[in-house]
Length: 417
Image 1 (tube, rainbow, N blue to C red):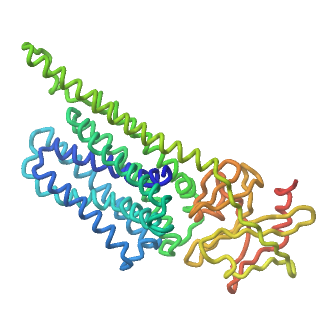
Image 2 (image 1 turned 90 degrees about the vertical axis):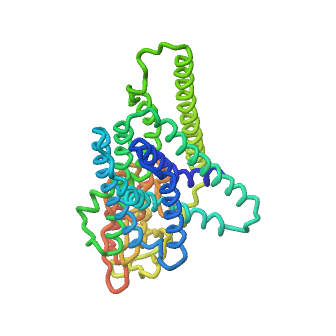
Image 3 (image 1 turned 180 degrees about the vertical axis):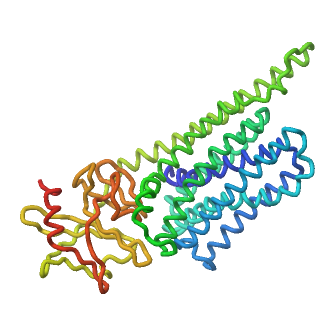
């Protein structure tokens, strides 16, 4: 249950923050028919997510992932630019006649959050097809998804309610911070996808720069969650002072003002309570992940012929990480091979510069260090840096992976007992 609640929150936490802040800004700008356009936004995003998952378009392809992330980046830049323009006009009371921008802005927001909806639909697919629909385990997992959705929706309404007395400039500043993180994340995803799909040439220098960002996707996610706390000081210190009367003469007005302050404190408490729930689920899932047993695939023993270790590429096809072991003069040298798609392969020792020969295991599309639990994106296997597996010199020729025996013997010292 906890795992599926977190999977849902991973996508909808950001969607809720974005949508809540966006609608709050629209209310600040005195736009009409906001509810109508917000409904259109939700319908557009959900309908698009469902249509794109019917098999007409392979939403799991790297090309599609790259296109979707690129659209998200472009839309993010466009949305922030237009919102700053409207805010400047609104600050001078000159934002009338800008209603025509409303549909375009909602479409831009839809394109920004659409990748999250697509990922959520994939989560639902995994939930429904993992076993029998009426299995109690599936029902428990479904409850986790419901809890994640409930917390996300509550978060969105808490953001809208807490934004009432906050200036549009403060909201826009906070929104911009979240958008910048989103741009960094989706720029990395799109470049990685296009490089793996062969659209952008595989450049060693560029990929070396991308590796920390690719492997730092989890960190970006946690930073985004942590930024939820930053909303509270934005609400408190970004309060519109024009809405705070300096001199309240009548008792009725004093009571009304005190009630308003109590409501503000209540909604801030609601927001904080939701965040506590989100952080609790994240912590519980992380604890369960550390406690679970790690199943490491056994290494296939290989030998050299004519000073070369030769492995047919068909033996390392598919999405699973393959492990091989070569008996050196004193120690076994274990190395990894993985297919990244589009004829690109990653080959590296089952060791890293930081943790030594502790080894790695695969968890879905990531490779994880057994010792420190650092997450390494599968597409970065074969590139140096951080806790990445140490790259292993090799050649791909005539449908075969070829490794010089001397290279393996040179690295034998890493696996010394």
